[in-house]
Image (cartoon, rainbow, N blue to C red):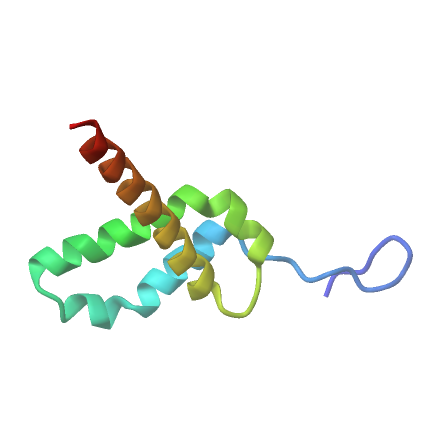
Length: 91
């Protein structure tokens, strides 16, 4: 525990979210290995998309980082779907 200059305990140190993301990816390693090559590539892309929201994810430092990772992936998918729908409307 770190002690502040006032003699009391300081807040806990929050691990960088990029490290949390990699730990979570490692936790799912067995699942990933059981997937087909095509699905492993898709799995890797999902975790890569979660990296786009690292800055926002720092604000959600809580006990279940997978929730933040999954929401980050959903945000990226939402943007992709909107882009596809916009292109379809143009044609």
